[in-house]
Image 1 (spheres, helix red, strand yellow):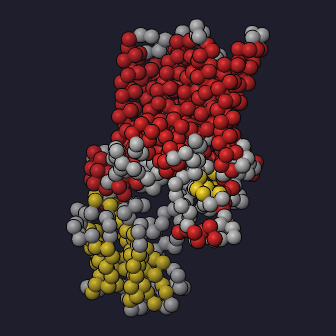
Image 2 (cartoon, one colour; image 1 turned 90 degrees about the horizontal axis):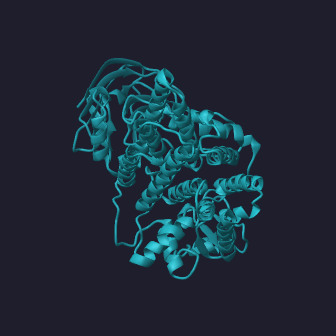
Image 3 (cartoon, one colour; image 1 turned 90 degrees about the vertical axis):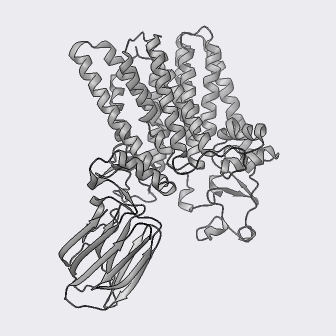
Length: 598
């Protein structure tokens, strides 16, 4: 390996690590050391160190007194959401691998909990290092020479173009399990690559089998990956008539599998019961059915669903498009992996010369896991981490192979294409990471969010402002409608910390409604008939109160936590009450509109 390649690897690893550890704290949750913290895996660590498999949380006696606490309609306040209630104890159905690898050892050594966001950053950095190491091993095995610049672009793609940055937008038990699975699956493929042309293949195969097993202990459906790897190795050793060669791989894999089954049996009395049937949450989310009716919609959402685009930072957001009328199809805001990693077209450049078995194990595993997830009927952004990093690894190997073989304008053209696709993917991943699933960064630290937004918003019209001075005046003539009809008068901002003022037609009268992300207030007003009404709406820095005046008389005031808006997001008379939901458009007549925003 050339010195330049080593330097590139170190630099990109440092950049990736710095970003991961920063992003894990960006939503306003700095790492806390030496404390007993919340978090499901930390609760489980206390259980493990206490000598039992359940978490030390006492279920609500009212919940235990119910004849069937799992049915729909049970008061959510009685439950610990998404924990498993079984025989009067709470357990986790989420994989046990993060507990074994990090949370329990940490508590045993320090006596305290590990910050969950630190744990996620650690798992994700390890996953990237394994992926990057695999790519460089494949290049060496194939004797392919790529420039330091091309290698840097490929490593950036593996660090940022695989949906992992999105996990940091909200760190909870789900993200921990997914991040650990990413680490273990990447490690399994790395050790598999290291076993090829090695002087100690048994050692590397044993490491690979162990990591495939831990991937299953993180996310059980990743047993698909272990099956594919086992089949590939079996074919390889059968060709060599060395059937015992696969044993170093199978022994640790089987041992971990048996360990998981014992863990399940000790908790729920059955080796294949993970506790999903006993989850305290929505009954519709506790199903484990696979169905072909969900496959095509799932492939749409997970692969090609486009993002919501805006001229205002962070420019790219997730969006829920309910395009399919399919029973029990679950859809959260999501964009397809082709927008996260457009360079995955590199899979079409794969050849046996580039990594052989390892590249194709990664590609086939990514495809199989994608099809499995599509068939579950669950479509949520974080699940793409289960398959996209392996697809990105295969695509990176494919691009490396085709660029290494070409010369002249073909090499330059392919390199330019790679750079462009990776740049698009990186921007998309970082943008949706900033927004996250629920704008946690914005909610947790709005001032830092606004400052970062200003760095990337040179045009004042599209620059988000936190708690700006707002003065809006307009004249509107509104036409009477049936009850329930809502006419939007003013919208400020987008999603979190957005404020909307609307006119409702209610029981033959008008109501002014002000609505934020937290709550709403309303005030009934006189029916003015067809005459134009003069509206004055104001919000001033430091007051955190929006006031609405009608014909010079204040009729409504609304206390706000914050208001965040760019001038371009101030709309008068436009239908911006809920862009993601169909709503009546403004039907009145607007006159003399004046908007001042500083």
